[in-house]
Image (cartoon, rainbow, N blue to C red):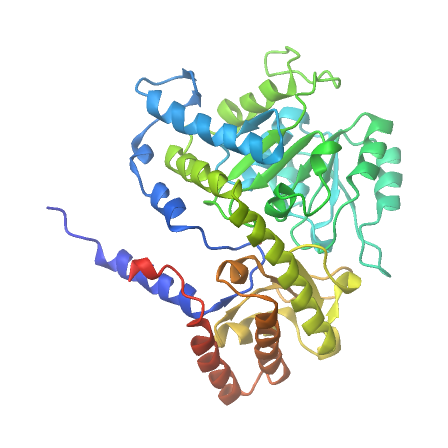
Amino acid sequence: MQKKDTLVFDLIRKELERQRHGIELIASENFTSLQVMEAMGTVPTNKYAEGYPGKRYYGGCEVVDEIETIAIERLKKIFNASWANVQPHSGAQANAAVFLACVKPGEKVLGLDLSMGGHLTHGSPANFSGKNYQALFYGVKKETGLVDYDQLEATALKEKPKMIICGASAYSRDWDYKRIREVADKIGAVIMADIAHPAGLIAKGLLNDPFEHCHIITSTTHKTLRGPRGGIILLRHDFDNPWGIKDPKGNTRPMSQLLDLAVFPGTQGGPLEHIIAAKAVAFGETLTDDFTKYSRQILLNAQAMAKAFVSRGYNLISGGTDNHLMLIDLRNKNLTGKKAQETLDKAHITLNKNTVPFDDKSPFVTSGIRVGVPAITTRGMQEKDMETVVAMVDSVLMKPDDEANIKKVYEEVKIFMKQFPLYPELG
Ligand code: DSN
């Protein structure tokens, strides 16, 4: 019998304990259900299934065909979509496939600047999207912290990018998708909306619906959607390709076919069918009333948390939040994001440093932190608990060099989190 690899499994156990004891405020993280995790560790991982259900390059795909079809159908139902691809290994892979399908190397794309809350794959020079394409950016307005749609429009009309990208990693407000569509229509651009962060809230109709106005939607599955780590691409309307975009052989095809080809064989080989099985389970959960309640609680918690921070003199970019996260400028507290992250880590409170718009510090230091509530909401926290969490965060940040206080908060966090058990079935 094969000997259990205790070196690795002991560390996995240690990670479970870390997750159990800490307050998780990283806006992009969440805790999947046990059945989602269970599905990830199953035998479809052994199967090669290049292609799509009913059209694979390998034999023996009849069962994974059924699994992938369930994932697709459930996902379409969640978002009232007409087509979905559940194979992207991550959000970055989903975005890469959309770029490959819609833009030729060297052509222009327009996205939200990374330093203003955008994402690496929306044109950052460090990423394929900025290296292979000519990336242009819009930002947020200095006075309001809101997306500068006037700048977006002016840049789009002047530069005529082939694709406009909306969506963000660190933006706490809802989007005006209608306005973006009006701009795109003036120049014949495709719109890709990357809804990785707020997808679960959009699924439940709690934020504006990007599908009404944006041509292509991408997302991850592990943030507010609370599924396994992974990516997806969706269309509500299978555009008959008015842009005349061609496949690699020079044929004009519907957008759904161009995107399928861009995922496989364009950017990926064999799909991760065990992860697709877990996506199917998670999408089943998303369709339940319990998930509706969970998503509403995210919004209530985010509002309560924002209020608690503001009442302690924290400077929230844009003054508040419409979604699951907030971005806090720490300059009035004489702290960098780096110092805040590192100090809170010692107290077992996890979040990430983040640049704030018009930051004067580097992305390694930053002037801000990003705080999100999806994970603590999954743990069962409600509005009243936000006050407790913010009080602990504030206690650490106000005395960042007071090791005794940090230790005291660390102990308080451990006791507090016992009220919100995580995976008790795992012993
Ligand atoms: N890294 C993710 C986040 O934290 O928002 C985005 O991909």
